[in-house]
Length: 421
Figure 1 (spheres, rainbow, N blue to C red):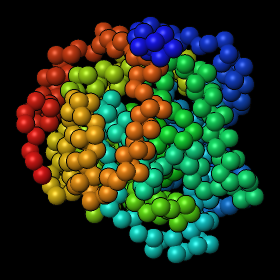
Figure 2: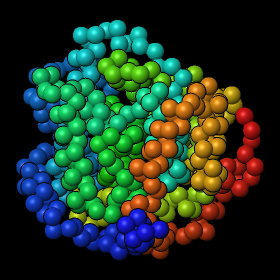
Figure 3: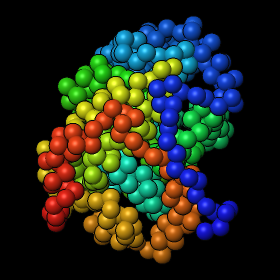
Figure 4: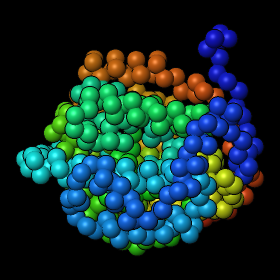
């Protein structure tokens, strides 16, 4: 390997509890902190801001309002937000509410959207660090399939009168600049670009539902509410959004991905009964420590002094929820429509894994698809930004405890032979 193509050395993130930001991030963060100091993190303030920004007031199903109340209270009581965090949370939630208003306006003007068929989507279900992102991006490279690019996930419906989609792409790029400048090592764990294939939990968040908020802020009260309420209505909202996006831009068959689905198989299957489900697996010790490190690092965006031990314990509990949900409900997904993929098998034979998924899905793996996937690998070599040295001790995690706690999941999906469909 030449010097120009050599991968950067792995690093240990030594500032998880006391973040050190690059000097270049100071002007952005100072501006946000000043803005955040004057904001009220209340549902009323966010609803008013969204209405003023759009001139709209049709919210659709009002079930989201209770969740918004719980989320705002959890942000205030649990999240220990910095001034920057207050600004980010306010703008994020207001943005979700704006998206909600624009979707309702679009569907009211074009009611045929609700008759659009979401046919046989390919849905990847797996925790972060199990190969889901790379697999999602590989399949999304196929020009015959429809994926959710990051810019579109942030603003699914264009602002009337703006150059489309360039205005949305430009705003997305500004947000990514803040992330990349403030967290220069984040791309070692999860590379984000304007066009990368993003998760549909971004769309579920427009219903003030799902796991997205937990990934940015410490929100145990909101998570408790989410876990004790049926998510079927929010999955229906997700489907409605996909119908609108398909109506706007096509094409017809989607490839989707989210870790949240692991604990929501009944709602997921009820919403997409003809889908092909790809469930990814990896040793939960590896997954938990890398996932907890990534989220602990990201928490610096909204909190001056993140507690990586508290955050990691929280995400060990959530990993337990998700993997136990998978263990409990895996058989809800019909054998003829689902496939289990182990991380090590995928890494050893990417082409074979994709071919097996396409065969199950009845999707042609033609020359155009293969060439597009090959080009994606050339343009996005794995590990090009270098790796992170994940150390459980930095997180207060014990590998033996994790292994013992998640033993049943590990035995079924990681160590024992997988059942064949």
